Image (cartoon, rainbow over all chains, first blue to last red; front, side, top):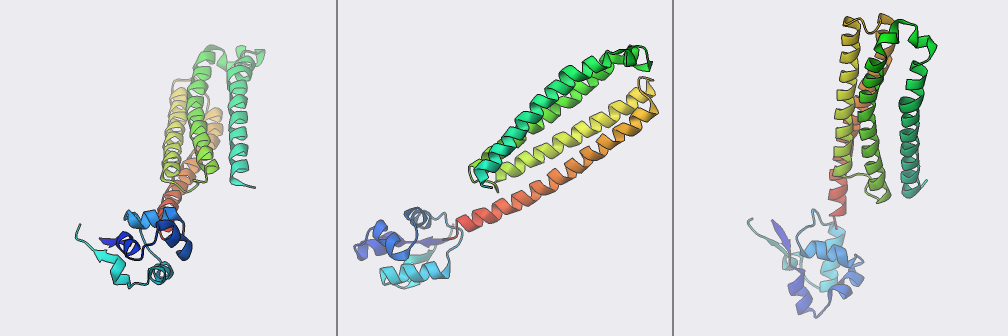
Length: 67
Length: 159
């Protein structure tokens, strides 16, 4: 399954979840859904905004793990 | 009309139908059946057969009203397309199907036993057709609500 590792990039950029949610324009609840692996899909637009906010590549936050 | 007001209207109508049913089947029908029109006719020996039959046939209707109330609660919580609602609709379909079958079978048995007449059986077919229609509609809507609930879940969990 695809896992979204936002915590590592947030720590590297010294950014809080609240600051990320404000920059990306999605709620903290939705960020939590992403972090907890409960999201069923992510829009390219959202991925764009997260990568722009964290100044990273999609591969830095997306990881595939065997279930 | 907002969801909350729709839910309140549905609950009001459910309450009204419930009270109306109690008045019609609990008070008016027994009183009407004990008038001269029936006590001196073919039905005079079978008063309790018919009152009991109608009473038993009314109980599943009240169970359906409970499910409709539960659906209205879900609508009020902005949870119209939910798995719970699809299950409630499925249960309504099953209950109505069972009650319709019961209604038809007892009518046929009463005719065979001489407690009823052919004209009553023919008129009761209208209620059987209504029951079959409600069964089909509830089953189909249950399936559609289930699919919609799955789409809603997909949409809610798309960030």
